Image (cartoon, rainbow, N blue to C red; front, top):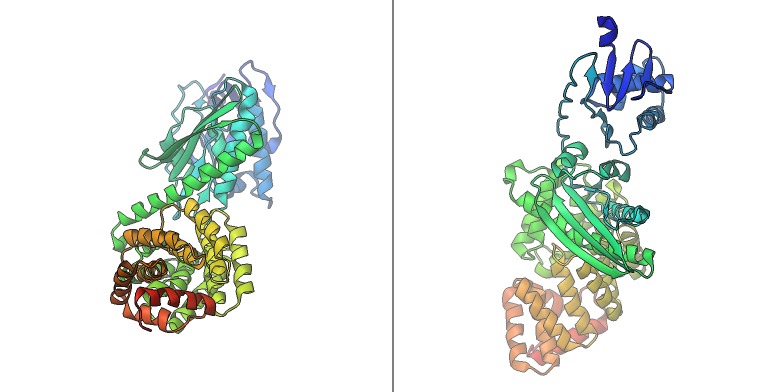
Length: 521
């Protein structure tokens, strides 16, 4: 073979791509059939090995004279993978939303295989991104792989409902099946901050699942858990484990994102980090911190004018935050809350926090049906988001259905055992117990809330009322005095006048407890 002909031959993974003959040959020298455009695309991939090729670059070379749809590229890529047996996309890798990389070592002519240069890490998206890798089937029975695959797919689907996560599609994350997991490689190739991996072992009517959440940038484990169940109804067990895993993963990522944002100097924050800093301050439930939270949310809206979440949180905390601190007059806060809620739903019609804020504003207007309609949409849009369940619990709590509200607050607490909305959950439990006349439980909830959020002024008021109902006059009087000391303005607003979301009988019920605690009003 002359030098020119030799230079036109490329070898990879046992295949020979002969550009002179225009043929792809397998290891035995037999020609592998490929359509003309698929062969042209394979030639482009092989001669560009190690480089990221996006669809525009591919179209300019392969279809320079015609306009084609994205499906043309997809079909040719499918042909190539079928021809070279790349079922798991180990050779020709898809880089989500970016393009393709031919990742095999390639030999040209008579040369030694030249190393494929490492692709530059893809830039991480602003909001947290996560890949759920295929769970390893440790059962020793390949027929059981359907369960481990089904579990991973269900987790991907469940996490995709979270509006704060960018979840890598199954087709991309499942390319790592059967490989020793290199988390740093996954981070580079899929541009993710977090990776979920796990294993499934099935034996003698029982199943054991191990799962872990990894910070892909540091390689450290954020969360890990083991689940073991009797395998009576395989689909019921799969659903149960999926719910348990996603319920644990979402708060773990939220906490990791808060910590990540806190490590950055304020002047370097992007829109996502500013939003996270706002959440951190909001979770402290003090008047000063809520003011700081509002500042950070406002900064976030200016850094990214298309980002719905900070507008939604501005609406949420203007609409509800004043209820514990009275940092601004109610008329002002509800007006601002409404403006930000409407802006949020313009940007994202199904943002659960914006819908929650709108539901509360409906309550303030006395529109219970409208409030329930909006929280229904919030739950439908984000069933794993605690904010949606809190919103519905609040509507039920102040419309004479406190017993139902208690169940929903517990649901919210299970979905978000720690987080910026927990003070609202704990406060809601306290009030609902009081409305149900379970004064001992109300005292317990109030004391827990005071322990975790000592500046939450409403806790002292409800503690005083509940202790008064129990006849514990000395303790009740101390709580009453504390409620007045912490915020005389808040006490006067809630006690001396009836706010619009309070039913008259509920307001009188509260006043009855306060009078028994020693209030002279």
